[in-house]
Amino acid sequence: MKRFLTAISMMAMLAVMVPFFASSADAQTRRYRDNDRYERTYGKKKNVYQRHRNLINVGIGAGAGAIVGGLLGGKKGAAWGALAGGGAGAVYTYKINPKTKKYERVYRRN
Image (tube, rainbow, N blue to C red; front, side):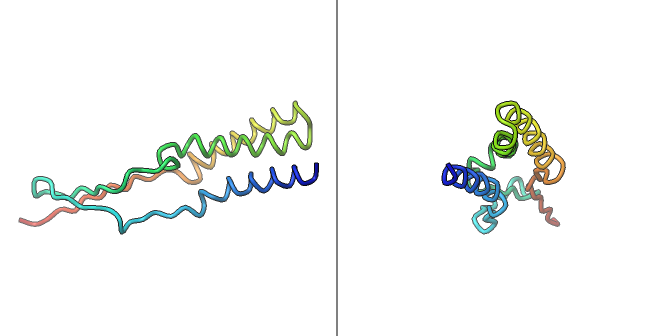
């Protein structure tokens, strides 16, 4: 049982730490001219985390909270832990680390 709990807690920590180590590849973007007014930046197709960032962060928080709550308080503790973890994930996603748009306009002189 100890090995199982250790493996689950390690997977939860890995799932929480993966978004922190994800990096962007600014060198892989392409720039196109549009009507000689500004440049639009087109990059690679967004990966799964970038497309579903909010849901993944809240889900990871809820899962981690459910694991901790289940270990401490059984089924009822798992439910409370999932609620608390989901709330913490939402606070992180929407308030602490909000999504920023990476659109860039470069105006030229005529």
